[in-house]
Length: 151
Image (cartoon, rainbow, N blue to C red; front, top):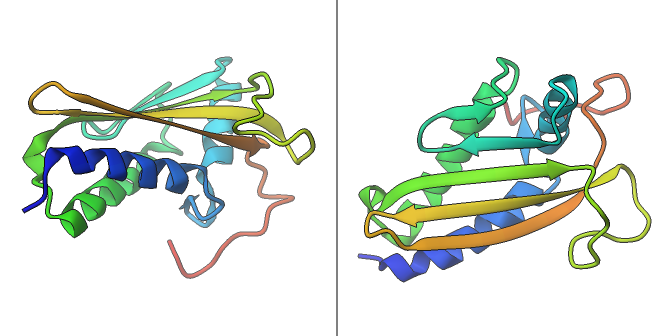
């Protein structure tokens, strides 16, 4: 049986996953899809309540990303022997078109900088927090190559 302290490692692993180019939804990069929804709604951030299955702003094209993220979290918990009931909440928030932060962004690259934050709260009220970032363009299927076999 795992221990709650191992949720710190879960957060670190998921932060790497959420900023990875392998963070796909329906064959396209999930961050780009989230960025497009943010732009389309005139906001600079997206909030994803993973356990509660909610996205703000809500948009039908990305609601499935929540389920994908939920599966990732539960897979991480299962592999470490951590009880699902120990996770009271799990939220990830993306901020788009941020200032360049050398910890997350190179000076050159494709797209504009984004930063993300993942928080997992335990049933005992302890918070585990992680940050990640990179560069992204809004989703555009006309210039992106769709990944096949994983959706």
